[in-house]
Image (cartoon, rainbow, N blue to C red; front, side, top):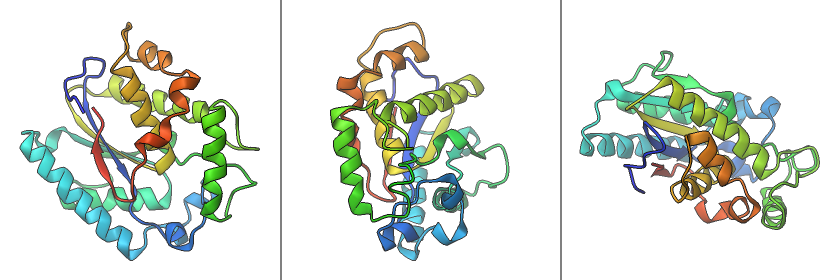
Length: 225
């Protein structure tokens, strides 16, 4: 992706958490109440994935001549994302409980609703089919695509207001990160006065319904912009 996009003042990377215990069990764990439980953190394979992602991120930082002083890690409060972010910070030799590494609640997993919580991950396809038909429609008691994009936009705007010229690693989940990539892909083709307006222009059904094109594997790191 083009790292010179003018609508943001920082460089961003996205990282989906490593393979988690819910991934191994084939479970949907999307509520805050369940998501923060330590029993749903990374599986051993996921810890190895987080280590590799951290090494890859460090390599990319060096290739871009970005000093660690300029690095910020922002992560979802769920145990699997916190665990991933902590491992990456160790690889980068960044102290975790400092301003370099901060939890942002707006980066949490998409809540799929009580009908899907702790059910088989085979049910994801039902939600994604709904997303494609109507990205404003909420799964019963859960979040729509547009709901998630709204809070992700707020998170990015907050980071843009706080930092300039930093390299920011966003550690989150499959659905939120594919939506974030989708909206940034659209934003790079828009014109407008400021980030909020540009993102808003992309919050149309024809864009929002296409987020699955940007799916990430567990532990996958990608430059965002």
